[in-house]
Image (cartoon, rainbow, N blue to C red; front, side):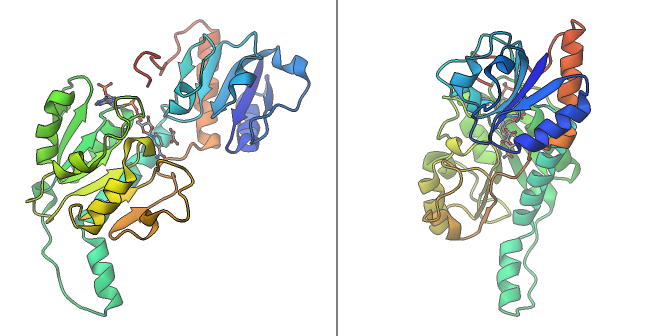
Length: 319
Ligand code: NDP
Ligand code: OXD
């Protein structure tokens, strides 16, 4: 009944916290490079893998594997593997991670809404000047992806007074949020959106969706004086050259990017000094081993009592 941590981030922290959460289990780990340096026999007893960017050749050496847990909410790192073992893939849904993402989204929405870049420039120039400040109720925040993270951000933004609208794959009814679904309703959603928040999983359908055409469809005549793009989903959903150009020619008034096409972002990327861009290194909602180990341990115990697994990924949808 061994648990294997196969993670390119913090394998020691995950091992320590999983041992604390499940003291009756053997917990072993790969190196940060994904290599297993223990005795090969150990792999034969592995029933659960907790993975972040695992190596496929390792997953194929686990004859007793029963569940593959993603150490993040996103599973594109698993869906990108050439094959997956025929076991359920479970992703992280946890109040700790959701709260971190909600905090990031609200931080960035307020940064742009309250004109932080303009005040920063004024401060540098020792200028005492008040800028016209629209009320939150006059600003429309559009959220792409009304899943666990999108819905939580939508709820808090609506409570702050923003007009919140949302777009998802399937139609939804969400209190205080006007909703749009599918490609057919995307343009209508974008045309009303001044601050766009992307919280989409990376799938073939969402790849490079945040491009010049989408940016051009955002509302331009809103009270903020220009549209803003915030992406905390996946970098593969954005076309960085288009975002950079839109920031430089003023099509976008501002942007916040937490995720990038290639991570880490290359030192020569023009985005580092794009105007009015908040750039963070994929930290919007980190997977905190101390907090998340408890939920994973609960899932394992419930699974062993014969209860159904929660947050199982649909391999056909890819999220
Ligand atoms: P969920 O699976 O709960 O929600 C995904 C949402 O996206 C759903 O509403 C889904 O629609 C919608 N969606 C998927 N495909 C499409 C499509 N083709 N067109 C329109 N809508 C679509 O995911 P979470 O909310 O938990 O997480 C979202 C993503 O956030 C993760 O996949 C991950 O990539 C990213 N993330 C980033 C982090 C960071 O630190 N930057 C941390 C954690 C997650 P429907 O409801 O109809 O299925
Ligand atoms: C995740 C992430 O998917 O951290 O959880 O990106």
